[in-house]
Length: 154
Image 1 (tube, rainbow, N blue to C red):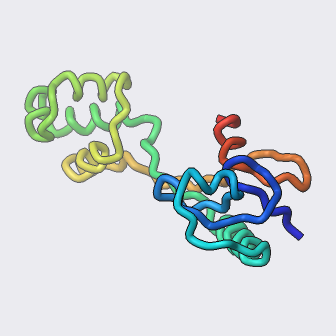
Image 2 (image 1 turned 180 degrees about the vertical axis):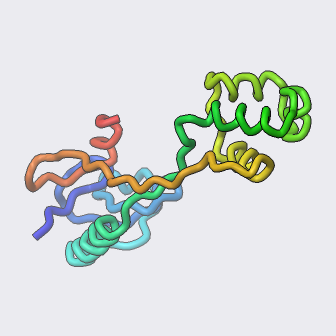
């Protein structure tokens, strides 16, 4: 059986579903004043919701786009292969020459958007998709984490 706690303060008591700052939270009577109460909730509803979310999180690893580590060599090599000077290349991609220079020396990592623009123009691969396992925040057995706990973790 789950211990049902207020998402804001952690108090174990009867809870209400309330909209606080446009986010639906399970809150106690004291914290309900910070938002608009939608309905009173039962512990069975919360237990089902928590189990459903845990299954969903376990099933799907996080997938992120990342820039390859040797992007400066790839960009500079391809630009030189095409016979373009940094100034000409900068005009083609609608960026400043300083941006091109910083990319090629590795001082500036391109955003995913810029990297995709470079990939298309130069016909190279700069963005790789990485599957990352989600990091678990450790907590004591039987404790339920509140929003306040997450803020303390960071």
